Length: 307
Image (cartoon, rainbow, N blue to C red; front, side):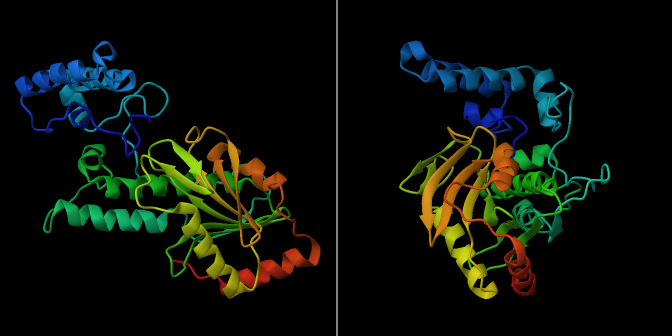
């Protein structure tokens, strides 16, 4: 997980100390964690490397001050300090190529929930000058940081979807009784229900469901199926595919078919592969064309509500 990810463990969390620890406490914790995680004494190599990286960030007064100011080294991909996670600036349309028609505000509901909870967590009467300040985000509880991670994932999926072309229609942040459905995508290859998720860790599949270190007490594919079912009934349409969209590298394969749900193919798709999946379709998923495509779009447009 990159250091600028909202769910990335802080150096203090890796070393097992408070952010207010003294220099002596920090050094003592570092030496203890080195002993516990060293591969030669039965430790884990990945955790041992994480401990060393954590020490590099806060092991000297200069490095610690730099980290505590809330900057993430190399977050821009250019090796420079770059504060992360603020809402993206409105994008200007590039070129003259027609883009997919899109409705709703991707990531908006997740960001709004994040803002409400982070202010509640900070305390009544406390003014947050920047609720996306990296130092603040790193101190927030994991469930709050998870909301921000999901907002970023939804926004990135929306950027991927925008380039599909005029033959596609997209609805973001669709309201259901089971929580919001992140994206509904209609095109010649079918009707897709998509959920953008980022648990900050690798995910695996088991019996048609997603499991992993960051998925605790959740049934992502089951929940997606319930949301899609309600939208399908309200609009009197049938989804051809349900997919959980995860970050690049979060799964072993770029596209993995999990099975089916009420006739819809279920899959987990890494974000960079999503546009190609929507253009080519998923194996076993039927296509929609001609007047049927127009009819399905009309029904969805009349039935969909946004959060």
